[in-house]
Image 1 (cartoon, rainbow, N blue to C red):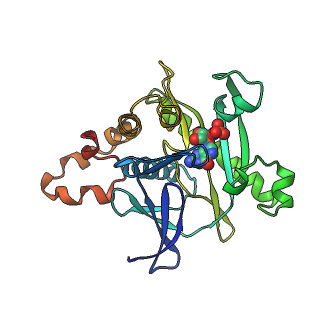
Image 2: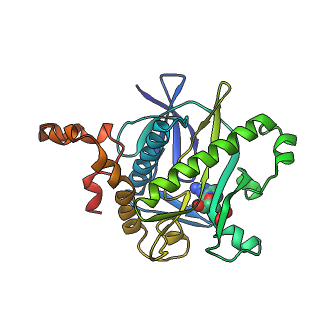
Amino acid sequence: MKQGKLLYAGKAKSVFRTDKKDTLIVEFRDDITAFDGGKKDTLKNKGSYNAGVSAFFFEYLEKYGVKTHFLRMLDERRMAVRTLSMIPLEVIVRNVAAGSIVRNYPFKEGTKLDPPVIVIDFKDDSRHDPMLNDDLIVALKLATPAELVKIKKIALEINRLLVTLLAKQGILLVDFKIEFGRQGKTICLGDEISMDSMRLWDKKTKESLDKDVYRFNKGDVMATYNLVAQRITKKEKAARPAAAKKKPAAKKKESGSKKPVVKSKAKKR
Ligand code: 5GP
C-alpha cells in the first residue's frame, strides 16, 4: 500500500490518502499542544507512544466487539485505518470530576461520577469546541437521534472496557475523549485513544499520567508517557500465548511492524 497525498493535518496527527480508496494512513507526529493550541511543543518520539497505545486500545476494543477504524500498524507512528466520514463531535466520558467540568460546574475535583457523565462538544476550533446538547446536535444535523443513542451506548461500553483494563494496571480512568465516524450506516470509533485524549491517575498516588503533566508542568512529559505506555500494554503482552515467546529471535527487524505495543526501544527514552 502506497502513502498518497496529505488529506488533513491536525494538531498532533496527519492523515494521508493511500492507493486504496477505503484505507487511510494516520501519522502520529511528535507535536503536542494544549489550551486550544496556546501551548505548543515538539517532543521527540511522543508520536510513537501515542500510536502504540492507541493501536493497543483499538485492538482490545475490537476483541470485545467495538467497531473501530484500526487496521494495522505500518511502523512505530503510522497506522492504516478504514476511511470514515467523521462526525465532528468530541464525545467525553467522565468517571471522576476533573478538568473543565470542575472549572465550569460546582463539582469538587476527584468526586466519583456514578453513573459516568457523557459530555459532547462540537469539534470546531474556531468556536473553541462548545458543549452541545442532544437538540443542538440534531438541529445542526451532526447526527440523527438514533445515531446519538448508538454513539452514547458505544461510548459507555468503551468506558466500561477501558476502566476494567486500566484498573488491572493500577490506573484510574478519570475521563477521555473519543470521536466517531460513519462507514456506510455503521458507527465506528475513529481518531485515537491515547495519553493526549485521556485523563489517567495512578490509583494509589493520584499522580497524573497523561497530558495534564504537559498542560500544568507537572513533570517530565516523555518519561510519564513512556512509563504509562509500558504499564498499559504490559499485561496484555504477558497474557499473550506462550508460543509467541518461543519464536526464534532471528527476525528482530520485523518485530515492530505487526504488534502495536510499545517496544523495548521506548524504554531507552
Ligand atoms: P476537559 O473537558 O476536562 O478539558 O477534557 C476532558 C477529557 O477529554 C480529557 O481527558 C481531555 O484530554 C479530553 N479532551 C477534551 N478536548 C480534547 C481535545 O480537543 N483534544 C484531545 N486530544 N482531547 C481532548
